[in-house]
Image (tube, rainbow, N blue to C red):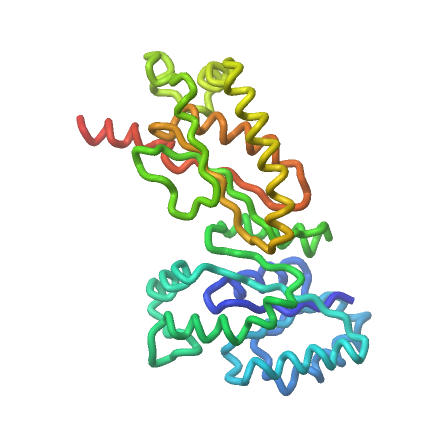
Length: 294
């Protein structure tokens, strides 16, 4: 029997997670009144042969004091009913944007500001987040990436460390990514841009990749960068970090940064302690600018 509480910030992706768990064979119940939760838990375990996977979504919409849930969970533990908590997290700025796009009021500030509702909800959910078995930050997560993380936890039953790493290439002339935790400047490497045959290509192309990585300084830098990153990641996990953005930049974000970002991603991708993805923020911007200028 696997019983999962799905909770977290309103607008953080709970509904999407619930639908995905349903697709994985979970019997899902959404927004059950708190007074009925103890009865539901007992019923679920009494009929464990019929329902071996249950997900219960709980959040601020119930209208109840969320502190009641803490007592319910304590009671479940005392009665020997094991459970897991999946907490859907999201940055305030992203939550505000999502609410404005949908034109919905926040459930904890129906007639007030969205920011006020988010702050109230964070305070109310602090104990749940503190006891969560899994924290998934959806601030920069695509739907397919969320599905991959849920599959990892609830289908493949692999250990999950709550950390999502984004290796991000970018161009300094377009600005340093505002969400970057670590920024590395690779403009010291020889630039393929000055060779006409490589100018329209990117670090995804073998010619550019082989040119950049053909220099000993690039190989040495990659080794040192990989060693440092592998040292840092377990410490970030221990500290409770959910998102780590490693930004690698060159002038235009097309050649050198893409090559080194790809190499770093390849060096880190096989570790099972975290989820990892790669993004190339500015890889096509030079081409767009050239096209608009003609």
